[in-house]
Amino acid sequence: MTWTWFHRLGSPPHVYRLARLLTPWFAWPAGALIVVALYGGLVLAPPDYQQGDGFRIIYMHAPAAWMSLMVYTTMAVAAAVGLIWRMKVAHAVAASCAPIGASFTFAALATGSLWGQPMWGTWWEWDPRLTSELILLFLYLGYMGLRGAIEDTQRADRASAVLAVVGVVNVPIIHYSVTWWNSLHQAPSVMRLGKPTLSSAMLWPLLTMLLGFTLYFVAVLLVRLRAEILGRERSASWVREMLAT
Amino acid sequence: MREFLGMGGYAAFVWPAYAVTLGVALLNVVWARRALSRALTAARRRLAAGGGDA
Image (cartoon, rainbow over all chains, first blue to last red; front, side):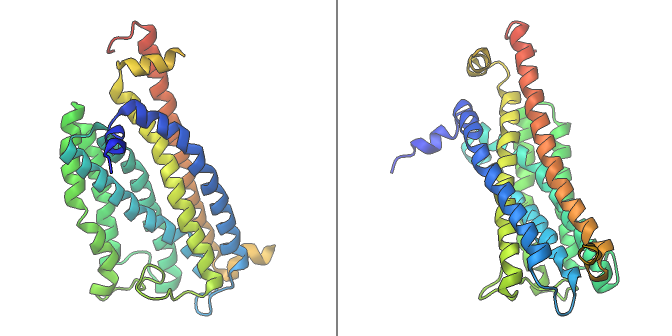
């Protein structure tokens, strides 16, 4: 096996072109899957025997929470690759992840609050799952604040990458918080060993939604990445050539 | 239809949850596209000004 593909991923013009080419292949399937999942979750899935129609919040809450963790993991892996191989494009990926992840962490907390009030009788509780997810939001905000505070891009890349990599320890803490500690939050019903605990009529819209949001994330990331690369490559000749044509 | 919108009494929680998440998803698309068009405009302006680092 050759490593050519890896080296080409370090080339900004190659990645820029690849990102532009791939975006619609992720965006359109993402949109279609999310629309189908919305219909499945809001209309086709039967009400829950305990939570009635209130359980339908899961189709927004679980994807938002999934995004908050998946985007952070992507960001930390990209940051680590950037640190180890001094790859500019990897740092650009990490920087592009942060605002996406932060906004979905906010959505996960907000929808969790909207679910907690009718089911637990409280908007917020200093519970392990909720608290660790809030820390995740602060990690994203800290990462973006740190980047914004350092003028020099290379220094900002390295400093923020260290923060992203160290902060990744929070990801398994969030995921396992409901099994390690006594939590108000329910245990995982899909991301668990063995069979999911949801019935199939409730499960397929959720899995479709998770897949849809994952593809959506790639599409948004690719657009952000192009903006990030352009900003970094300012006076590179390939940018000039691309804009001249 | 009214029954659907009522969400079995949970309308006040279900619909805001959908609005927040889908709103965040939509905003991310808008933000990403705006970032790209700004970067392209800035790059074009630099090119017109002589191609140097602004």
